[in-house]
Length: 246
Image (tube, rainbow, N blue to C red; front, side, top):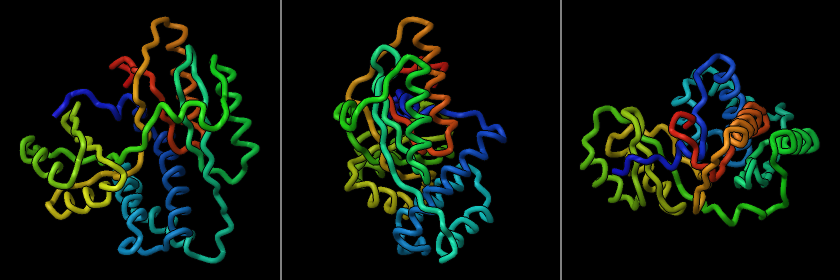
């Protein structure tokens, strides 16, 4: 199992403060709302909803909150309408950045995202300007509760995993082709593994390093502002972040 985590390089870990938890609840709630409206409120027949519920629970979202969001989204009285928008641009020194949003106000979100890029030495680009540097992969997170490494590797590759990494004692990251994600999740669940999340992510083909402190500071601030915005669901980039920032 490789020790270097691709996932930690492209998705920042946030401290579990109350404010951070509230934002996580909001973001996952929006995902669940859209998912229920598109595929129904029954997780047994809506695989994506099943994955989102697991994701919510792994982020300590209370069951009552999850059920409330699902019921509201399934009811005819819910007027929330979220639209998926993807922004692409460059951070300091040309770091490629992809920002995935769920918003009920495109003008507000576009203005906010553009402001963040401009403020911290980057620039918002056109659709396709950086996405060619990334590829979509399935990413599955397993709870690592004293698992046997060799057995994990054998089980994951049985269900067409591409790669595994474990840079801490709590989580094992498993990547796979998009077509293999559902089978991998279901297969590992049947074998008794606790799947924390299973979702599609953007993996950069290459990473770049920032050398000067000013660029590092601006890149960190750009990521913080993007991730603190309720409309922003995911931020992907090709910055090879220093280990202490991962």
